[in-house]
Image: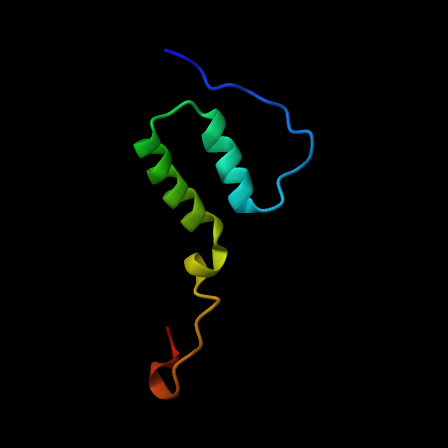
Length: 65
């Protein structure tokens, strides 16, 4: 089975999304698989979505969530 090509970084990626793209480009996987990994890694990398930090609390008794 072919292994992923390891390429040293000359400069750090400018963002998490850029790092994901760089990783998937060198991973040597099918485009369909790369798409799924891209979605997963992007969702995982956005901590606001995991923690709900971007949500505002509803008023009243529903504020406890």
